Image (cartoon, rainbow, N blue to C red; front, top):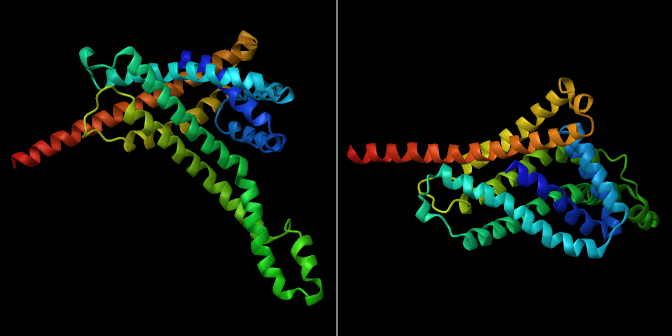
Length: 285
């Protein structure tokens, strides 16, 4: 999974950033997303991704977007194909009951599109959050200031009232800063649940989905932060391996992320088996 994810990472970045790069107004908000990477991935990985993003933004090309979109969908589906094969092993699906190749590929393509939609939603939260907060703050501040505005200066109050020093705006920004990560982790949990539900060829109806999805999302955030701290304080990959050290760190981070996804799937199976045994005991009583 980690190897396929590494192959799919840069074509996927090329597609998303090329699409956004076609719209000049979205370039500035896009750079805000780089700040989120600081809290998740190691600095070397963040620098590698940021460099790729900057290069794509400097030379937007509609033809690149067209070709990279098709290629990235196909390559990224290979990541989910690997995940689906691993999920079949976790769910102990017999060989004769596994999906044929063509059906598995169609399912992986569908999962890819669904996952990308969730990724776009999560990215959209970052891109438009400040704009929405500013609009809400402006309206609220105007409601506070209009009663004290002289009748002959209403137009000036409506169109020229600054809200930079408005207390409500700073409060809204602080509140959104606290809610941004829980909401993002909720979307990540939904993406994991999407894969857990449709990934395996066969799944017991008693097997839950959300426990593993929620735990794996939290574990992913925690493991990524721990790995980032380890690389920052103890890892000397760049000093030892040079430039290739960045790719080693990227591959290790993708491996940890893939492992966390599979741990969540195994947790769902374990919880489902425990619930089934509990139901059997209750039925015998």
